[in-house]
Length: 289
Image (cartoon, rainbow, N blue to C red; front, side, top):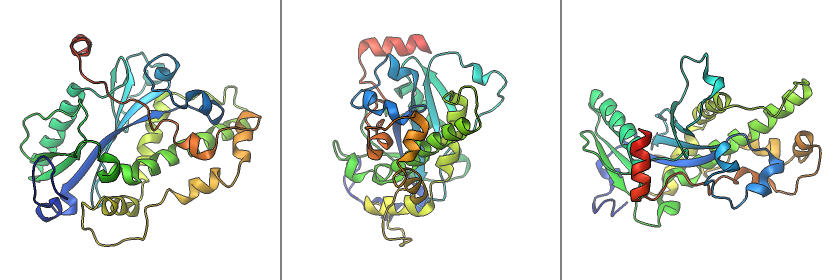
C-alpha cells in the first residue's frame, strides 16, 4: 500500500503482519433495542437522549489476527452506580462530557501502546485515519501512518468487516440477553448498565475470529498474509439468530418491528466519535482534565 504519510514503500514489505496494526473508533448505542431503531436512525449522537446510551469504542488489532488490544471505552462524564464495587474492568474505561475521542485521550492511549512495544523491543506501524483527534506525539517504537483523506472505507481493515462482525455479535446478544430476562420474569428485563456493556464489549471483541481479521486486511490490500478463507463474513451464528427468526423482535417488544435487521445492526454506524477541534472545544477539554 502506498502513500501512507508520504511513504512510498509497501508497508507489507517493511513490516510483518504481527507488526502491522490498525485502530479506529466506532459508536455503540449500548442498550438500544430494535423497536427504537427508527427513532435513532440518522441521529448523530450529539447530545440529549443519544448521549445517554452512547459509547465510543476504540478497537485495535494486528494484521495476523493474533493480537487484539484491550478495547478503550469512552463514556460521558457521569457517576455510575454499577461500578461501585467493581475493582477492575476488562476494558480501558475513560469519560468525558460527550463520550467522544479527544486528542488528549488518543495521545495517552498511543503513548502507552508505544511504551508496551518498547518493552517488547517491537517496531510496529499503526494505521489510523485523519480525524482531528488522531494527533501524533513523539513515539519510539510505533510508526504512525495516516490513510489518505476520504479513503478509509476502502483502505481501513477495521472497516472491511472487523467492526461489523464485532457489533453484530454485540447487538444480537443484547437482544438475546433481554429475551432471557423476560423468560426468567426479571422485574426490569430492559435494564442494562455500562458495566454489563463493558463486559460484553470485551467478550465479543475477543471472540472476533482470526479469519475475519486476516481477510479484512487482505481486502484492504495492505497485508500479504496467507489465505485462511475466501471472504470476510459477518458471524453466521448471530445472523441466524436474528435474520432468520423475525420472532426475536416481537419477543422483545411485543409488536412487529418496522426496522429491518440491517437497520438495527447498523443504526449506530454513523454515531459521532470525535469533535472537530475549535477554541471552545480545546478549553472544554482542558477544563475537563
